[in-house]
Amino acid sequence: MHVALVSFCSPRDGKAQVILKKLLSASESRDNRVDVIDGNDSGALARLTAFDYVAVVVKSPAGFSAKIPDRVREFLSSSGSISGKKGCALVIKAGFRAQGACARLMEAMESEGVKIDYFDVIRSADHASWAGTKIG
Image 1 (tube, rainbow, N blue to C red):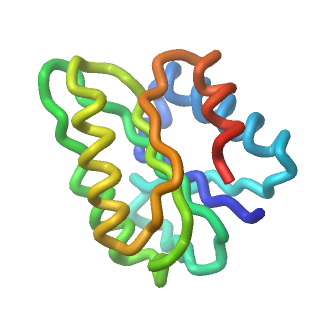
Image 2 (cartoon, rainbow, N blue to C red; image 1 turned 180 degrees about the vertical axis):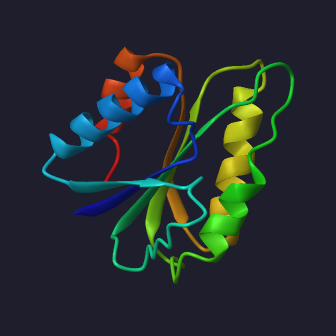
């Protein structure tokens, strides 16, 4: 299966990058072909139409907020036809409202027509290794 792993995490965030690598390797271990796409890069035009599965990863905001970046909705709406594709919503835990952020991420993905078949709040790199096997 051809999987798009769309990350809205900072490339300078060490914890997020380790988790992304674990998600990537675990999904590839299931014979998926995974492409990591930086969703924050406004210069990159990513068309998700060619992918079979869309996995979106965001980091929850610190503190008590459950807000997801506005860039997520912008990216998904401008990334081609993704209606009807399967996908998963993954949130890296950083604050107290990570579950709320996950619900908002699922809402944003479902509003574009993505069928969510898995969602989770990633707490550690070991948890990411397990969750990555659910991608695809």
